[in-house]
Image (cartoon, rainbow, N blue to C red):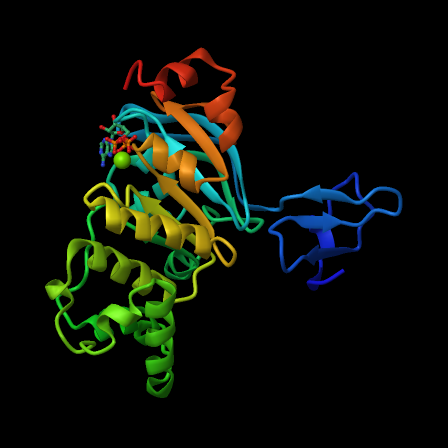
Length: 291
Ligand SMILES: Nc1ncnc2c1ncn2[C@@H]1O[C@H](COP(=O)(O)OP(=O)(O)OP(=O)(O)O)[C@@H](O)[C@H]1O
Ligand SMILES: [Mg+2]
């Protein structure tokens, strides 16, 4: 068997006497080796239990429980106002900045409760990066945009060139900008700006990337590039994406969760959600009968 062997410690599931997790190089599933039967179980990157959130008196999330496996693309779908962005933002505590926002329940990232006292939120947001609906490059050069995070985190100057190039390559933007790194990021097209924002996120080596409708302002060609990128990035990162585009969810995601009025109605493998939804409301939504 090929792959990196990592001691699992207490993360080993109860029903498996496994001592090691083996991360196969070709697949994204972990094999728990039992003496009798090897079982394939995708490990969880994010585990959410009974999560409730209020904006003042209004409850926006009504007890969400969901596991997001590592190294997959997980999409969140549902009509406007159902709580997709709110839920996404709980995963790197972006809601902390909203006054009168109250949260109950648990969000675990790699086995650690991110709402526990003493959690370093700056470090959390480095590990759980976010790309927004509207590209938001800083008013500085392309290079400085990508180098911004590493500089803040104290990366030595001599390492920056390599990090910037690598992040731009991974975001499929290097070839388009390598001769104009010192020009303003604001001179890039919308699709290029969005890829720059992805590069900026990648430059601080996150484990998870949250995308909130990253393509809603983009043309089909730029959208295709971002979708390709997500598919490529999932071998190294866990990707969570909010989308209103059903075809996009079906094309890029391994798993899909459908939300309605702050509740999680149904979640599972994308093919199952789209081809064999269990809840009539999911079926009505994906077939365009409401929302
Ligand atoms: N900062 C806020 N203060 C008060 N209420 C908010 C805030 N942000 C969101 N809400 C409310 O919480 C509910 C969920 O909003 P959210 O933005 O999460 O929905 P969404 O599913 O992302 O919608 P869309 O598809 O339109 O982006 C809505 O009723 C919204 O009005
Ligand atoms: Mg939203």
